[in-house]
Image (cartoon, rainbow, N blue to C red; front, side, top):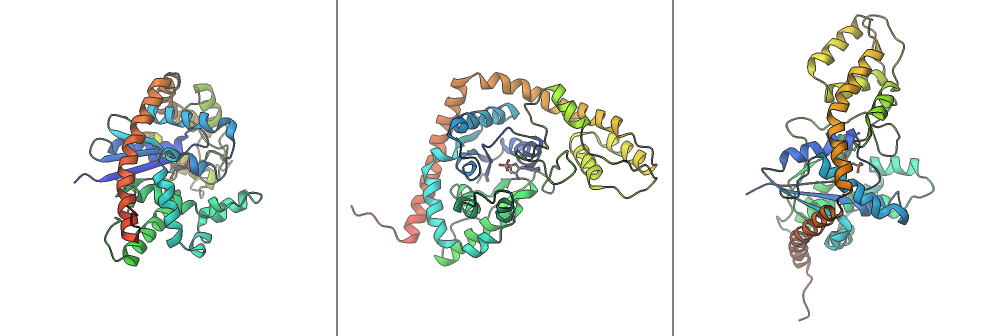
Length: 330
Ligand code: AMP
């Protein structure tokens, strides 16, 4: 049997290197061998971005960027979360077997309430339940995600196990957070702290033009330490982490040696880094600009993908409701 792979991205802004290397690139590599589902999480975006003016446009933007980066509608089922109402119905049911205490302890919830103290909505609290519903509705085995999603995947496994044991069935598989061939990735931001994120203003977007990429990289935070074998500061470590992801190994080793010798020139390192990022992102940018103009390709992709996603989702939901004791009145 083919393994079921699922991944998704919120429609809250343009895709950045973190999305690409954390989730998208892995997924793209898996398209040939597996049954793959990829979706745009527009419902999740409402927890922080409830703006009707650009809600639909954002979905189209993210969709164009997905396709430009290499998602293939001939190989993968590509759909929009809100167009598959079975996900929301499973989410309602799942809320009956997820506990407020465990949701309150989630790291992402604690971080969100710190960042948005004026809008601590229940959607933020139950974010992991909706995410688990996205995954369990297709009974996925593998979920290509970045390191930031590790805890949510652990919770999804808890919810799956709890359902199986409450109802004495072996229905939901336990999905694994997955990175093709290695550990989960966390792409740091260019501002010297934390991860690259859509709302942090510290990222390189796939749609950025060359001048913008170079400007952002040249401005990345470093330090002024030039003593040999000094301990690396967080911002410099982050710069090396990005370089390890996008550049050839010899280049990384060359600059590490320069660092240890106390003779590193960050300007040179950043120039090389910007070159390597551009090699990856500029061809994608060209395709994004083309695909964005092709309304028919976008709508055909979503209409076709959504029909397939609904078929799989409806089959799972039917079984779940049967297990839970729902019966027809007919
Ligand atoms: P989001 O943009 O938060 O909707 O995340 C979509 C996907 O990109 C998820 O699989 C995340 O784990 C992944 N992702 C987001 N930011 C990063 C990052 N800085 N490093 C690695 N993966 C990331």
